[in-house]
Each structure stands twice: as C-alpha cells, then as structure tokens.
Image 1 (cartoon, rainbow, N blue to C red):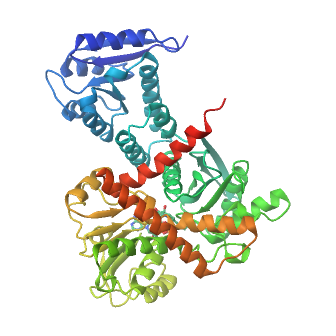
Image 2: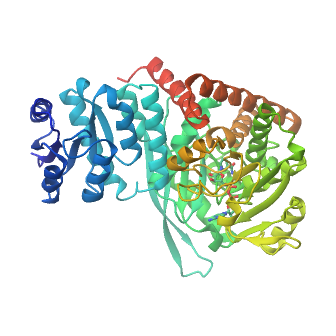
Image 3: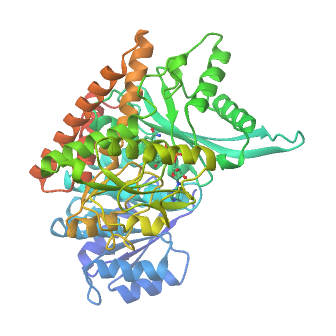
Amino acid sequence: MTQAMNIVVIEDNPMHARLIERLLLGVRQAQYQVQVAGDLATGIAAVEEGGVDLVLLDLMLPDSEGLDSFLRLRSRIDPVPIVILTSMDDMELASHAVESGAQDYLVKGQITGELLSRAVRYAIERVRARAEEWRSPMLRLAHQQFLKAAQIIRLEDNLRQRLLFPQRSQVVTLSYRRDEYTQVETVFGYRVQHVLTMGPTKGGVRFHHGVNLGEVTALAMWMTWKCALMHLPFGGAKGGVRVDPGALSKQELQRLSRRYTAEIIDMIGPDKDIPAPDMGTNEQVMAWMMDTYSEQKGYAVPTVVTGKPVVLGGSKGRKEATGQGVVYVVEEAARDRGWDLSERTAVVQGFGNVGYHAARFLSELGVKVRAVSDVEGGVYREDGLDIEGLARHVEEAGTVVGFEGADRVTNQELLEIPCDVLVPAALENQITARNAGELRCRLIAEGANGPTTTEADEILADRGITVLPDLLANAGGVTVSYFEWVQGTQNMMWSLKEVNQRLRQLLQRAYRRVVDRAEAGGTDLRTAALIAGVERVCEAKLIRGLFP
Ligand code: NAD
C-alpha cells in the first residue's frame, strides 16, 4: 500500500471542510490523512509541524482575506504545494493566487472526489518534479499564461490538465570528444513534444548552459500555441542541450550536434517531428543534423529539419524570417496607430539571428535604431546606428561592443532608452516587475520567447505600453520553416519574393485575428493570442476524440 498523503484543509466553513474531508477519505486510488484548520494561524502552525504534503486553502478566513491569505501562507510554508478552494464569485481572485504561485484552484460547488484527488496528486507531483529538472522560470511563466487563458475561456478541466505537461519528452545524456583527444564531456539533452494532435510536431533546438527539461517544455508549449495561432498544421516541440556553445570549437560543436541527433533519432522525422534552429544553433547545425539522420536512413532526407542551408533544400528567406516577421508585425501595429515608421526610433536587445535581422529590416524602413546589445553589452547612437557597419564590426570583433562612433551602454540601460519600438531579441525574463516601470518605449515587439513576465505585463498595460506578444511577433521563423517543409515535401522551390509575400500575408491575418479578439474580449494581445491558439488545439482534440 502506498503511503498516505497528509493534507491540511484551511477552511472556516465547517460544512465545506467536512465535505472535502469526506471526499478525500472516500477516494479509492489514494490514501489521505486530513487535518482541518478553521483559520490561517492554526493552518500555518499545522503545516510547520512538518510532514504535510499539500494544503487546500480557502482565501476568505476569519484572520486573513483574499490574496493576502495565500501570500502569508506561501511565505511560511514554501515549498509545500497549495491548492485554492474558491467559490464561483471569487474565481478571479483564485486565478491571481495561481499566477502568484499556487498550484491550482478548485471551485467548491463543482468538486467531486475524483477531481479533488486528481488536483491534489497533480499538484504534489508538479512541485516534486519542478524541484528538479522542471524548475524553470520559463515553465512557470508558460503555466501562468496558459492558466490565465484557460480561466478566461472557462476551459474544461480535462483539457486544462492534459495541456499543462507535454505528451512526450525524452531526456538523454550524450558524450562528445573534446579536441584534446583524451577528454570526453557528458551533457544533458532533451526533446519534448507537447501536443501530437495537430500533425507532426515542430520546434527549434537550443544549445545553452541554462537549458533543462522545464525550459524546453515551456518553449514546446509556446510552439503549440504559436503554430495554432498561425494555422500551421503542427503541434509544438522543442529540443536542447545544456552546454555553452561559445566554449566549443567548430569540430566539437559538430560532434555534439551529430551525437545529439543520434540520441533523439527515434523521435524525429519528416512526418513525426521536425527540428529547426534556436538560440545557439544555426544553419550549419541543421546541416549536421540532416546529414546524421540521412546517414542512418541510407538516403538523403532534407525534410527532417528546417532552417538548413539553401543548397541542401533550405528555403530562401528562412534565415532572416524571424526578424523579418517581427518587422512585418510592427508595420501592422504602426499602420493601426497612424505612425510613419521613417520618423520613428527603435532599440533592439540581442544581435544574433533575430536581433540582427529585426534591426536590419527596421533600419531599411527608415527607423532610427538607436541602440543594440549582445551578451557583452550594448552600443548607443542617438541619431541611429549603421546596422550593416555594425554587422561587419561584429564579424571581426565578435561583439557589438567597441563599435566606432557609438557610446557604450549596459543591457539594463539599453532597455530604458527612450524609443517608439523596443525589440527584446535575446533571452527570456528580461522585462520584469523590477524594470517595467522604467521602460520608455511605446510598443514592445517580442523577438525572443518569454522576455516579459506576467507581473511586468500588468505594469506595462497600466502604463499604456502595447506588447506585440512572442506568439505573434516571432512567428515568422516557424512560418517560413513550414514553407520550407512544404517545398521539401513537394520538391519545389519558391522565390524569396513568394516566401516574403506569403509570410506577410499569414502574419497580417494572424495580427488581425489577435487584435480583433483582444478588442472583443477586452484582453491584452498576449492573452488574445494565447486564447486563439488554445481554442484551436482544444477543438482539434475534441473532434479527434480520446483513444481508446
Ligand atoms: P542567437 O543565439 O542567434 O542570438 C542571441 C543573441 O542574444 C546574441 O546576440 C547574444 O549575444 C545575445 N544575448 C545572450 N545573452 C544575453 C544577455 N544576457 N543580454 C543581452 N544579450 C544577450 O539566438 P536567436 O536565434 O536570435 O534567438 C534569440 C531569441 O529569439 C530566443 O529567445 C529564441 O528562442 C527566439 N526565437 C528565435 C527564432 C529563430 O528562428 N532563430 C525563432 C523564434 C524565436
């Protein structure tokens, strides 16, 4: 018999408390020991005695009310998971508690034994898992965003639970030889497929020292919503290796890329799951992945990856597609605001694939790009930087820092430079509650995935700064990846003009869908984009039905 789980119920209504106790004790699949506390102080004391697996918390108590109840409890008993008990009237409050770190909420009038037991088990499992591989601020953000959208559309519980975690994930360890022949490094690698309902899965591969299962999962979830928002026939996936690619020679990078491909080879394929570049990987890595896969099959399979060099069947326009897409979406937002972009200014954080191309296409439209940065720091010029000149400097110096005629700024200062359009195109978690009040831009176009936290979103909304969310603003990459896959499976090649025309058209339509939905629902653009994606996936899941 498995060990009983100790649950503390903090609930001042004795009838409700008794009902919950009865429901838990009546569950057959699991054993529970239940303690009831009628106020917060008694509840905290019970948990602090130790051995408690989970707390069920009513937010309205005699000695504490609202979100305060949750925050006080959380500060005393972290990391014990907390599930909120709420009435229909207080759902918004409950979802705020979830955004602030509660694991879940349950609506009192609708609780059944099974629902309760599942929420308890899942919450405990989630906290345990997160403590290890799943611990990632990005996954927390992806969950917060999804739960918020689910609450707004009253998503049914079966689907909500199903979509919180990926359908398939593979964790591998892989070894590659360093150039000094005797050294072998062993690192962790991941491939995660979030939703397999929509067609093959699709998503980039990230080589970065911060990658873990949680981060890759968050990125895979965002890919699901992004593909659905764009009406692409893919579910979301993502991959990664926990390694610093900057510390590797080209040969080491090649050995690592090939070995990673070999380890995940059963998961990928043109009709199964199609990787693409992301942070720390590029066309060359895709070429090695394609070659490794093809060697195993015995014939060339170019469609197993996208974002590969054009000579191997890559699409024209793929390399620049994400940055180009950011700019197409900015153009739409500018048109809605009556802006002439040639009179506007921009700042770009990150000068890799996405940042460089976004800066380049903005400056081609006459936008003054006042500052850009990379991991080493940033450069600033009031009247606008010469982006092509800067790119040549980066080729020689390896960083934007030191570019002649520009002043040096830190990455933090860069975000606070006055401009019309700010493009975060580096890392996640850059615009937070700490700096959102200091930003002096009017529009944020998210080139990076997850650069803005939920708390910052609220501050930006209050300050009237519009966020063009990552799901939309950086969808150009996966959209042209889709074009590449279509061209590959049909053995056809499109011209650059054709690619860009189609890209602009799909992004324009998605932009309109998001803006219209936000206006109709009274939400911000991020929530509208997320809801559009979530609803499409849920519709597909319900039509396909549940096997068996
Ligand atoms: P990249 O590796 O080509 O470039 C990353 C850039 O960010 C580099 O200039 C690097 O120096 C800079 N950087 C790293 N750490 C930084 C820090 N702490 N502060 C400031 N700058 C820092 O990566 P990329 O492909 O351009 O991806 C950037 C972002 O865009 C990621 O969030 C990625 O998930 C997202 N994205 C990429 C694509 C794509 O097609 N490549 C598509 C969609 C989204």
